[in-house]
Amino acid sequence: MCAIDKLKLTVLLFLSLVTGADLPALQQWYSVSSLALAGGGLFYSGEADRFNPAATADRGRGFESSVLNYPAGIQAYRAAWYPGNTGPLTSVTIRYMDYGDFTGLDDEGNPTNDFSAADTWIQAAAARQSASGHSAWGLSTGFLSNTIGDLSYRAFILTGSAMIRLDSSRIKIGVAVQNFGWVQSSSSWRQLPGQVEITLSRALAHLPLDLYLDGRWVAGRSTYGLGGVFQINPMLQFMIGTSSNRLLQMPGDGSVADIIADTG
Image 1 (cartoon, rainbow, N blue to C red):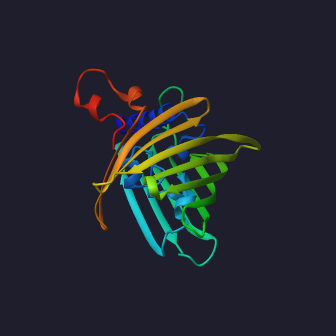
Image 2 (tube, helix red, strand yellow):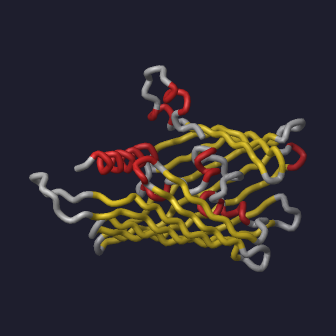
Image 3 (tube, rainbow, N blue to C red):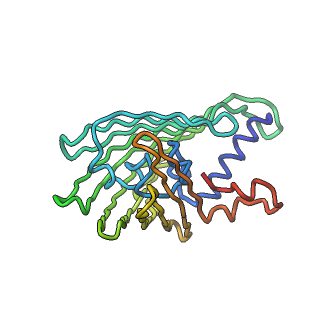
């Protein structure tokens, strides 16, 4: 196996171990905001349809896309359409993760057929906001397809969320049940465990800064996140976030990697 293939497999294994998820594809990030916030911040992620569909309730009409380059040539693509306040449908999103091409080898190390690996994920969200604007709820459903050479699986994904805004305290509270569903591999179906995420955020009184604290629970494993969003102007934001996953990623050698581990 060539060096680049080993690096790609290392990245895939790393994602599987760190996310602790039944399907690591559901935990990967497809937008700059998701990277910046290390996957946290229910109210601020550009991928609200998958993390917090309730946040799409007041989203205006528009279209956005992104391309992210990960190590070893792995690429993530995302395109999202927002129809505006024309009905219950608030977003339709297509995600594609290209893991690249691999060199196939038999048990004795002899080259066989090359193969590729990729994920394709289509998701639609619907949301409603209360007349007062102090609360909202949302649901999203998606279809995920993964292929690795001749192997494949398909999954149906459901996510639901609710959020409350306390204007007098400048506080937002969000609760989401994410990635509940079923996955088919070969001819059998099994249920996905899903995960629960709770976020508490507060806007500071004298600075254009929102701070958040969140917790995520999946498959008996907990992850906690902390971060903030600094609104410089309507077109420019500065985001930073980290999570307790950094404890798994820090090499512990006092290098820069210890500082930036799982930090966006």
